[in-house]
Image 1: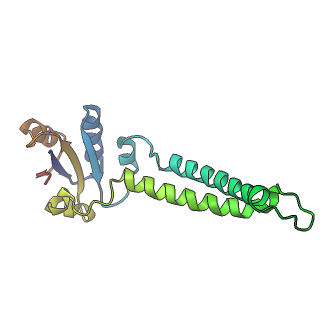
Image 2 (image 1 turned 120 degrees about the vertical axis):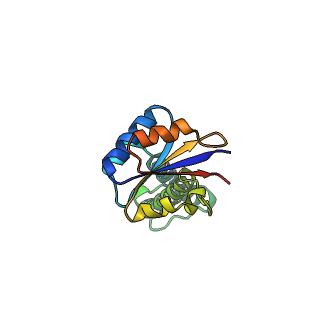
Image 3 (image 1 turned 90 degrees about the vertical axis):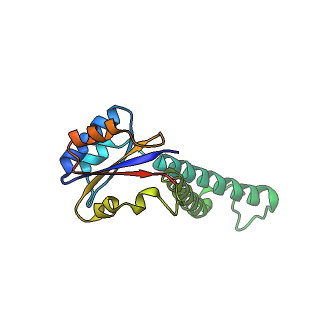
Length: 172
């Protein structure tokens, strides 16, 4: 069981600087902004695994589609139609493409859900007024605290880094 400390910043730059310093100290944090923040992306952890899993799903889809057609046409039910060979790659392309799209989209979607820890229907931050204002006029930095209650030194450090408001939130 842990807690979050929400720090509200009136501007983007102090929030990004504070996030960079706290990330360097080993804290787990998330950024919430009223608009996309390119500087904030640099502070967050490295690249996502979603594109890699999507690629793996696409390659698996091509291989499965190709193998299934080859097995069905060459071994399971071999019929010579129009003098074509049992192993005809050009006829396999449309089905392989469809299998690639299907498995790539499903694997990308499932990886996205796992990476975002979804579905989580109730997040402890949703009840905070400061968190509700991040879509309007606040830049909110959420710092994960792994103990029972947030520490005063962390709150003092956030104030020193430029946080205008603080709101400690406990996990339920």
